[in-house]
Image (cartoon, rainbow, N blue to C red; front, side):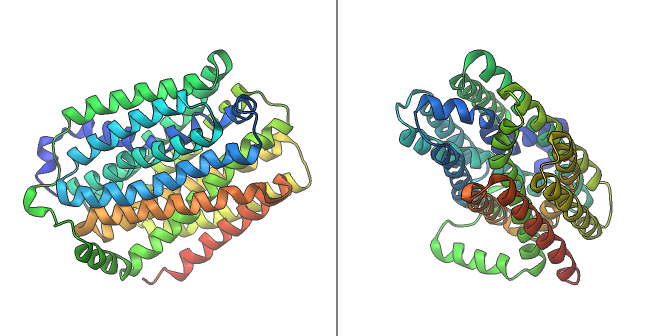
Length: 390
């Protein structure tokens, strides 16, 4: 369904591809380097917790950056803030390559996440500018599939680069991706007309926050997204170390990430084809919970890599459906405040992920991961039933 004049000046295929790649900035920034954790630890002569902190710093940056660029884009349009975020991204990514200490590396990762957030939040806002209803669900489904494919390619490509050229080359590749996104933004047409923009002031921001947080459907969808992001981040933080105990190389770890991302891509696309998105979320929530229990059993009783990966793949099949469903419901519920709604939505997701990932290292990684997976998935399932009448 056509929602605004922006749809007429931005070619549909270009929008689908470009917005999909922009939304994949988060996975690119995180997934491409995770299999290099052991190498980074050796390079800086540091401990695993500090290497994991670089992931946490990036997620905090992704959360804060969405609030920053999402709010700015409601006042100044989508295109100029997006360009500014991409310039900052290029500088921070270069910093990740040249800094001499793990502390500065963590700092650069924060700014890299902050800048990459501009692409993530503005991609959702542009989609909401241009589509509504089933059209918006279709767009988010396509974006989700592109995002999933990108997430497949990112760890595989990252693992290959790390294997043959070292971990710093990954950030060189991320720099080139940023340059490509700048070129796409130059081609992009503005999707938010001047009459639809809002003044940037604290009072208007607080009023907007009060409005969107008073919407029960929106808040429930945000909570669902936060839970699935926490699940994804727990896996990101635990997977390299768990698979290292199984004797997998960096390239093999990347391949496993790719296989699991295929599950996300498939379920993201399939979920958008169903008319009753809430029913999809309830069904997928039940599936996630069952799969997480199987995964916990595989980890706690050390049933081996095949059992671990099979259960993880099954869980990711359902995670993708909840992710697409919650995004569609949230953005369709608050399209009049698309920039702020997208910013708050994304910020909650990355804050939840950033808070959950360090918990993985609190004890035996097999046990802590198992507990976190079961708690998060079952909470999502219960929430889907509690909010069914919103």
